[in-house]
Image (cartoon, rainbow, N blue to C red; front, top):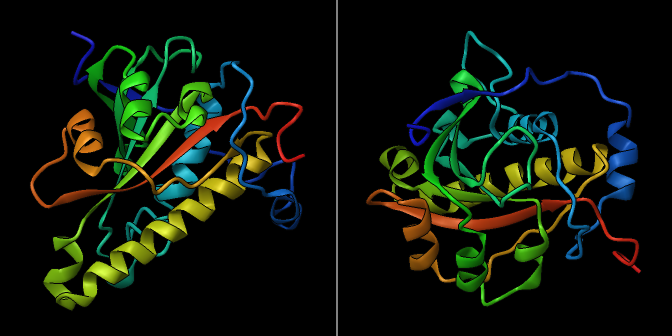
Amino acid sequence: MFESRLIALPKPKDKGRMSVEEAIWKRRSVREYLHTPITLDQLSQILWAAQGITDTKSGHRAAPSPGAKYALELYVFTREGGIRELPAGVYHYEPAAHSVRCIKTGDCTLSLQSAAGEQEQIGQASAIIALTSVFERATVKYGERGIQFAIQESGSAAENIYIESTALGLRTVMMGSFDDDMVGQLIGTKEGEKPLLLMPLGSPSPQAGK
């Protein structure tokens, strides 16, 4: 049974062809994508940049987290043919193993587009990353202030997704307008876990950014 299976991702690289400075210069929020697949290597690098382990001894990750509480969870929606070597479905990123686990089979991107008010970039994207937060991980130490810290953490991870996507020749946009309950149902969020952002991924169309 493919569902629930853990799929190892390609090892992330610590050097790329584009400098950080160049990626920052070229970063833009793009909502128009070519309907072409991206590679598993590209997805691997982007997920690692968002929440990957950068120090195996301490467990520290690529994006900062107040108190190292790591309140974020990452999910990936893939359409049919959207990512080479990865069937359509919904996947959960597991940083410790740098792997994804299939939690739902089949193309759910049309349902996700509906949950996001029919925004077209969802339907065009090769894949969509959903960022959620388990606020309790932060509030257990910081009280109600931990909610704000968890939201700040999602912004750090989102910027890393922007920069890494740009460095790989892809584009994304940070989306906060969607029906929380509908997105949560598609992901199967647990009690206390709240969707914060959607970030579609794809190759930019020639008109993008013009």
